[in-house]
Image (cartoon, rainbow, N blue to C red):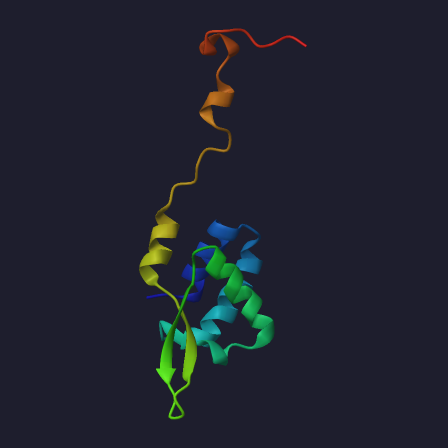
Length: 118
């Protein structure tokens, strides 16, 4: 089950920032989803849309659409947002890479040649 706390941990891990910022964003998102995993885009208030797009870019939300034919022959596109628990679990299980790449910690002798002199 996706909870506000679980989403906040994933947001903090993926986007950085403080725990309070992540919790605020998670509350915004979960207030729309509730116990559902898919919502219609029209339900989102314009100021909150920026949060949804940021989480989409970070891989925490997905979007998709379907096309419905209208009676007059035109098509109407309906946009949706989805929240996938498996994606959140995968993000929370990711191991953070080391801060400094290993090759930068190696001495010059390890490269088989000396460092260039200025």
